[in-house]
Length: 488
Image (tube, rainbow, N blue to C red; front, side, top):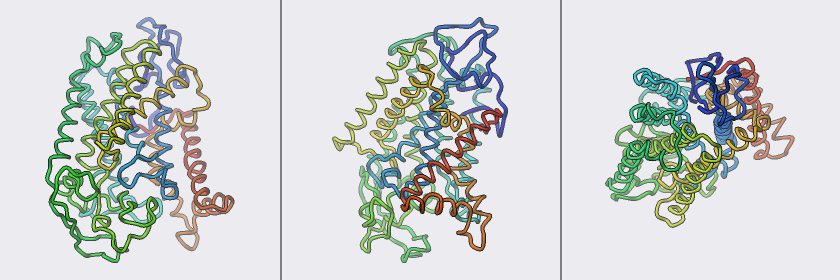
């Protein structure tokens, strides 16, 4: 989701997400030459050509594929979907992986823009594009893929979402990178903790963000609150329910400061109306699956909650700052061994720290609140996964096994909009026969996958893997051959 110009563009020559040490004087710089690594060989200045970090494309492609898998099969497979509250399932790694990748790409892309004013303008423009697409796709205007209508009452538009959170994190961290980077050290080799010292001011900002987040989460008093049930299918529709809190420092679903700030600033009508906590054991006997509410379920089970809200998005910026550090290592360190050593140590340290915080009951893993333990675990996991891809793809040159993920990662915005946001399926569902549930998508899912395997769960999982993830990977591959990319 990070890249060059607006819309569909043809790319020739150097690109933004590059390894600064992959330069050869005898290369043409074509897109097809993005493979391989040569950190020791340097080209003469007139012929220097940069090439993409293939492992970053693969990692981005994996994250987009996970998002499609989560959206399509998470309802049937709870271990794939979001944890109802505390805990960390597969879906809970998607957002921090995106933020980590955005951060990793920032030093690589901004390194090629020495003019700070131009760099800031580019960052602001890209942020506005992300906000536009985020509100359009997740604000309530698009009802794809199942509902063929469109439009949203502005009194109920959802202002927050996935792309909006990415936009905020990108804006904050990219501007921080522009303001704090020193042009004199951009091409200097570094080792050990010198990179931390070189960008010490960025870590000071990260610490300030952490202190502000913890102070608000544990310091704000959360009073009782009420809301009107807006779900027309709910027997309590139209009723005003009251949630009893009157406390501070709680991380429970109804009485946390994250939700309180969102209700006060955004307004409860502008929050997400189908939060993961609806599958909480206090709300339904079918937990962790979604099911009918208990007759004695607490009032908050019916309430909206914004998983990409204001305070949690502030905390999410830390995932991007950690990704930026990995990008700094890539820019400044000159050998594979040093890079992998730095990345691995930080990834393992973060992972262990986060798990310790969780299992010691100090700070639980919680994606909805974006807790500190959750940041550490997911950022550590992202660092370890990136190390694996870097070793396999950029060092061992195992490109062919990961080609579908690479193609997806190079056209991530297209695949996200068409597959994860359901726009393409919504288009196909618009062409129905006799009834809106009799479409090509419905027929393929039912007759080619579900009936063949005699299992709804297995059939839907295979449908998502093959008819969505693999299909769009192949489409992205064809577009890659034509050098067509949708970039923001």
